[in-house]
Image 1 (cartoon, rainbow, N blue to C red):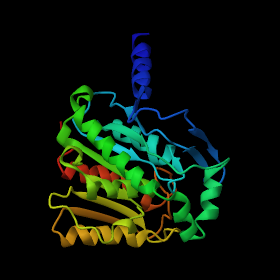
Image 2: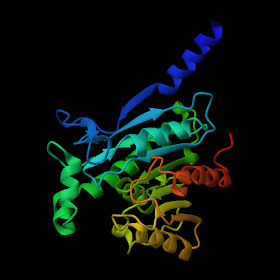
Image 3: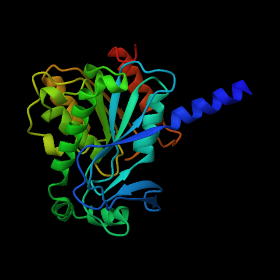
Length: 281
């Protein structure tokens, strides 16, 4: 009985969450969560108020934390395979995780179908999302600044707060790595199959954080070269950078299991964190 109660306590602890608004609500929430049959996953859409959802380590953290930015073309958030599943994986390994819901473009009944249609005409797509990428990067910067400022509340170190993101969330992550202020500097940044053309002409900061990159050559959105561009920029600036370019894996692999080497990207990420000294207490 005592063992059963302990097991239930641990399960409850693992699933315990805290939602942290990053800004006051400016009006009624239009946020929606549903299963997308187009992307075959759970998504969140119409985010107008950015927030963080906390996933604490069950057995005590190691002092490192990470802000996780799901992707979705700035029209949706792939909240499970690029958010919650990543958070739980890292929390199981002692890292305190915060899943970021950043601001998105307004969409109708099914944002994922709208994205698939719009993305066929890149110029029109960029007109529709407008200023959203800049606002989303601002939300990423605010998220890192918040976690650093409240590090003591979560039992973490302010100089061990990093950020990881996927696709559009990778854009947010790269944006933070370029545009942080002293109070929002990430200890590390990990854009995964990021859309990073926004930053091709941006200078690498003098105190740029270490960068971890992962993507697949057969990325069906054509984003593999963006990761190579980021790698080359960091390497040319003599900053710490690691790139994993898988031959196959497509776009949006996240925590999905495809029976491919790209399934192990998160093992390589935690290996890299260990090499950075961020897996030790």
